[in-house]
Structures are given as C-alpha cells and as structure tokens.
Length: 406
Image (cartoon, rainbow, N blue to C red):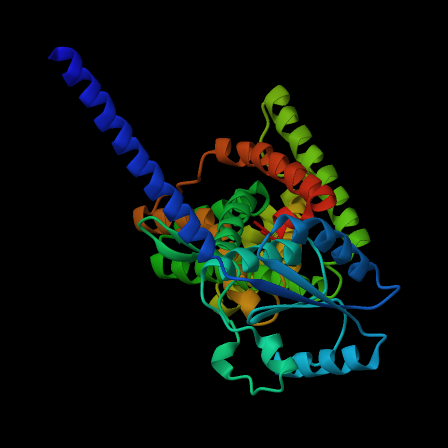
C-alpha cells in the first residue's frame, strides 16, 4: 500500500513538473512571438571614417539580433540621397549629413560611442514596445505625424522609489556637485575671506560685515560663473575632437599628480594653504584687505573688496584650473552648452562656494570667525588629485564613459 502511494506521489510530481515545464515553454514561445521586428536604416557614403566605424559596428551587432534588419543606403546613389534629404527634413535636421541612422521614431547623426549605445538601447526598447517606423512611412510616401517622432530621452530609466530618471542628467548633476565641492575647498580664497571677516568684526559693525563680506562672495560667484560659462561655450566647438580630448586629459593627469604631490608635501612639512601665493604676495593682500576694511568711505571699501575678490579668484583659478576645465569639458562632451549649461554651472558654483558661505554666515551670526578646518583643504588636494587623474585617463582612453553612454 505504501509502495503504491509512493509511486502515485512520484507520478503526481512528474505530471506537475511536466505541466509547469509546458507552461514555461508556452510563456517563452509567447514572449518570442511578442518580440517586434526592428529595422535600422543606415545612410552612409564612401570615404567617411565615421560611416566606416558604424559599418563595422553594425556588421558585428545586427547578426546577433534575430529580430533586427539592416537597410543600408549609400548616398552616392541619387535615390538614396533623395531619401536621406526627406528623412533629414522630417527629423528637422538642417543638413543631410552622414552617417545618418534611423530606428523607429529616433534618428542619430554621426557616430561615436554614445550613438553606438543609443542605437542598442533603441533596438532593445522597440523590440518590446509599440513604435512607429518613420522611415517606412517616408519610403511609402505616407504623412509622418508629430506623434510618430520619438522624443523620449535615450537615458530614461525607471528606478525603484524614484520612478523615471534621466540618468544622464542625474550623472551630470552629480559630476557638477562633486567637482564643485572638491574645487571649493581651496585655501587660496578662504584665508583672504577669513582675514577680511576678522578685520570687519573688529570694527563691531555687523551691517558692514554683511555688506562687504557679501560683496566679496557675490563677486566671487559672478567671476567664477563667467569663467565657467565662457569655457563651456568655447569648448563646445572642439570638445569632440580626439586630439583635444587627449590634450585636456593629459593636462588633467598632470594637474592631478601635482595635487597629489601637494598633499604629500603638506603631510611631510605639516603645512596647509595656497602655495601659489608667495610670502610677499600674501603680505600685500593682507595690507590691501586691512586698508579696505578700515576705510571710512563705505563705497571706497566696497570697490576695494570687489577688486580684491577678483585678484584672489584669479589666484585661486591658478590653484585649481584642472577641475573647472574638466567640468566644462565634460559638459561640452555631452553637448551641453548655451542656456542649457547654466543649470549645471550654477550647481557647480553653489557647491564650490558652500564652504565660503558657511564660514561667512557662521562668522557673522556668532560675530566670531569660524574658519573651516585646514584638514578639509588638505584632503581636497588628495581627493581632487585622484579625481583629476581618473577623469584624465577616462577622457583619453574611454571618453564614452564621460558621455554617459551606458
């Protein structure tokens, strides 16, 4: 009886496993049936190095995707060129240049690691989601509706708790925050601000401290904003050039190594501070600050504070040019320029100045100078040096990572 029961249980389990297996096979088959066919339309021309690079990529990639078809058009043919012109017009591109790639409702002009990653993401997205094949409508002379164009971000991901996040914007935000914060812990301007506050507090005039100290910080903010914004605009024209990436990357590595040397030097000699300004320059600045702080005329003092802020920030820029240049180069690499760069520049600027703002507010609030410990400025050389070396290496050898081509 027990033996029969045992066989019945075995038979029952076998039937159950068979049923589960059958359901899994049906689910897999159904999932395979639900995979959409995706067509890549690729326009190219002989002698174009970017076209050749994309051809090499597509020749390797397309055979690995069973649902993907590649339609290739050499625009040396008049018909192919006319089709490219129509496609460029539909996607509102001013010039019909190659390589030009269309997948579903998206198009890509040029080819680099970022475009490569975007093509792969588009194929993955359209394989499981409904979409409009815009090129098929153009070829069939059907009208293309505005809703047919896919304007969604290539960098949009759904994250737990956060929902849909544009990962590139989040990455650029984080880069702006971190580089600005590390750059901000620079002793060159901090000691001048602390000395200025000390002199103003000794006069026992809180209003004067607020106005003149605030003028120093505001001048610093305006100066740095103008420098960063100008650099972003200038670099946007040449950031994608490989030779320029190598030059900036090399400068970053050298600056990073120098910052690491400064950190080691501070550990050995137990010294912190700005090593760009010599003793004579520091004495001159101290004297200027003393005269400004004790000037009878408020307007004369204000003009003096603004002048000193500009001089000091020029010195500070010499201390840490590496980080601002890297920051602006990363923005330019990601095609962030013009008005769109203002947001990231302001984020960098906010965290760049956060230590100065804290020192200023706490000092005025307590009417006692509260400088941030030199340990922070000392370790900023270490952290900044490591960051510059890492980013420099990425910029030379793996620029797509800095383009956030995930």
